[in-house]
Length: 145
Image (tube, rainbow, N blue to C red):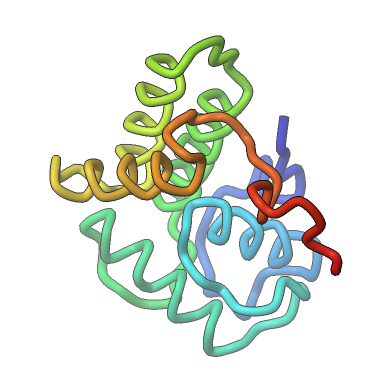
């Protein structure tokens, strides 16, 4: 399980610049986990993190600014928890993996069937239609040569 402990108990209020190093770092990690791009995970305020946070808030239907609202923090926690649950669940066969990918797409905000189909097609292609982990260049006998 992935945890963002420094965000636990934050009530919201203030702005991104008011967060402490560990809380800010966990905020960056959580945004990255949810496919937003906060830039370098360093616990320091920066424009990439500010952009990722405002995009996250906009996707929630909130004003896209740097306010750290309690509702945005709660949603961040709920979404990371949902994503973590999906990733931790067993996927014993191809169908279960496909269902998990679709659920992960939904958590990430990819709700259109065409978006989900694209992600599934990419996973299918990248795994040689097995939906199982593969070693890069597995078809080459000696990839180091």
